[in-house]
Structures are given as C-alpha cells and as structure tokens.
Length: 161
Image 1 (cartoon, rainbow, N blue to C red):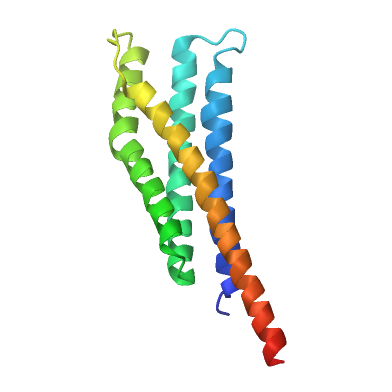
Image 2 (cartoon, rainbow, N blue to C red; image 1 turned 90 degrees about the vertical axis):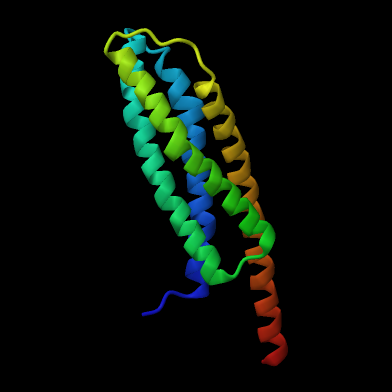
C-alpha cells in the first residue's frame, strides 16, 4: 500500500511540531531546571546533560530527515524549503561542531580538568532559540499551506462532481 498525500502532509507537520516541542522541553526546561534539583552537582548535571543532548540530537536528525523527505514528496513551496534548509544548517552546525566541542569540555570537567571560559555554550543556546523559532514558523507555514491545498482539492472535487 502506497502512502497517501494525506500521510505525507501529516508526517511533515507532525515531525516539525514534535521537533519543536522536544527542543523547547529539553533545551529550555529540562537543562536549566536539572541544576535546581537537590543534591545535583555541576559534574552530575553535566554528565546527565551529555546523555540527554546526544539523545535529543539523534531524534532531531531523524525528524529532520522525515520532514525533508515529506517536503520533497509534497513539493512544498520555496519559503518552506528555505525554513527547512535553515533548520538543517543549524542542526548540522550543532551536530558536527558545537556538540563535539561541548562534549570535549564536559569530558574535561568530568575528569577534573579546568575549563577556561569560551562562547560555545552561549552560541549553542542562541542557535537553539533560533532553531525553535524556525521550527514553529516553518511548521506553521507548512500547516497553512497544506490546509490551503486541501481546501483547493475539496473545492475542485465539488466543482467536478
């Protein structure tokens, strides 16, 4: 059985909104809140953070591939492609550059080595915020476009029936 246009539409919007929810919940809720828990040390919080952010990154990569494949099948407009490609560039910068750099800093901290200050963590947070805004914007544009397309198909069915 071949997946329908409806299935790809649902998967596109769902993947983007689920991705946005995961980023919001983990990056902007779980990460800062974990350090307010009783008896959580910086070392313990960083160790947990490494595990959580690596898992988030893997889920984001899967969701980005789903969104790109669905967008390709559906033939979305260029404004949606621009949003998707911007999100992928941010995700790849985090995956290939920032996460490994932050992971090395975390490993050094866990080993008891001093970590001189740098801007990588702030850069990651800024990119997370930009990614979250981009996800909500792109998901909303995709949803609006898909709803317009569905109305047009329904109007066309009524006229030809």
